[in-house]
Image (cartoon, rainbow, N blue to C red; front, top):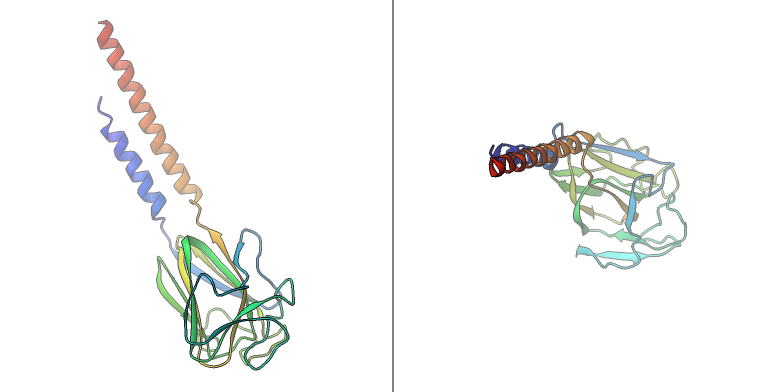
Length: 216
């Protein structure tokens, strides 16, 4: 018996693992939340600009607030450094590998802030007060808790490869960028394990048949 059919089954399982169905991206903004939440790992607390692709004016700042930035009110711990993207500036973080979720503390949300997400879904741009999803409680630059909060984007079958913070005026403030690592969905794991099982069965059957022929 040829092992090729079983290898084909493994290939099918692997392809399903790489590209699950029903891809979608959901976003939320929680004015009482802070990054990271369960399942997320912080990858940048913005103590330096290292790891960011920068255009225009971008700064690492520390409290107190001034005309070029204010720390996200919800950020924990408070009083630490944060990223401030000034007028005409942009900062892009490209993830080391695709991730299934992104979140960060967003300070004093403004209508002139622009968030761009890229991934398997293409490119998605969020402009507070213009883009309906997610709903922001305040978009007037309020530096208190009503104007700051936790932004989260989740991929259900989709992954994220990079994120860009841009602003046409002072400022877009960000802290505690966190990600959720890409892991196979349960159905994909089941298909992959089934594929390995079929391959193992085929190899065992072929070995047993070869032994019978040897002793015949």
